[in-house]
Image 1 (cartoon, rainbow, N blue to C red):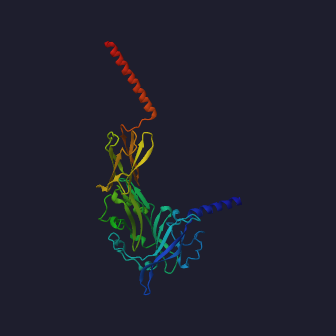
Image 2: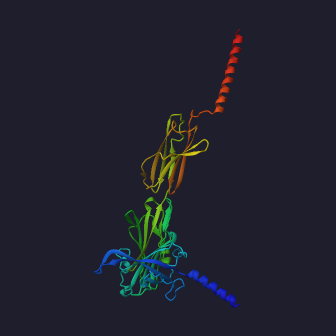
Image 3: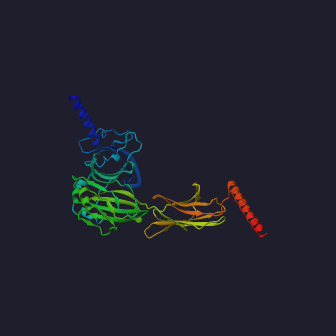
Length: 428
């Protein structure tokens, strides 16, 4: 019926819109200020801007037709064509009314040939400079809840506000934690616009490591000549089949080591263009605990018992060590952190630390003894190790115990007297 057809088309439209809709992104346009003479001053300016995303140049969804706020200049409103919908990821769509939004920054971009030896082959052949004569923009995005990071290079015909995505690089592993010895996958994927004359001239991929001002090349690959750079970190590789067929530039570390903790930058090169994303890797290994001496010697009142706890094989450096005592009645109490030594680093980069605890039985009410526990709190997990302490002759008898002992003494006294009388009577 007509009513059923109307309902069908309404549901179809809603489904299609929900699946295919792309977000409107609130961004900041950041660029260096120009001085009076036209040169750059080094200071930056930022303006509110808006990206209205569409999948083809002839369509705008209802959401993408949203008018900009009054504090956004019309010159900073861009209708972006994104054929692969790389900007339409759910992590870039904030719920209506939410104060948490994706982070977005737009910068002017200047196309130029790369001087890196694994990317120089991309610009060996002369390309028409006419295509490069346009307005180029770089967009950096960070999705909600750290689900996605993305960098896109866009080209707009000169003096227009309708750019098209030419190169997009993204990662879904913004922050990764791994145990020692495990394989690690750092995600990096890229897409290029096949209609662009730059996409048919090959590509190059570079992975670089940075940590506290120190950096090194992990891996570099020239996709045009199918060659890896001579400087390559041991145990680092790519899925080369997936790289060429699907744009999968993910880095694979076959065995995680402490020295792998840091920031990794995935850069994809096209002729005159590059886009990159950065992600963090942290190697987290909890400590192994050992207590000595074990078992502890018997203690007597007034004696000082020394206990050592060693935490070893952990990373990163931060560690909290404390001691606990659990009595025979099951109650626990803290004994403090003891005396801590400095950290020592092993050959594999892991750390160790010791704690010494002195138990003065004359000052601490330890009863007949109990369980002494070393507790190590680490980002990789909490570890505990225990040893039993026995204290002899350190118990004040109760009234009942005292009465019982008096009774026993009287009985023994009576028995002694009886034996004595019997012996004396027998000798008479």
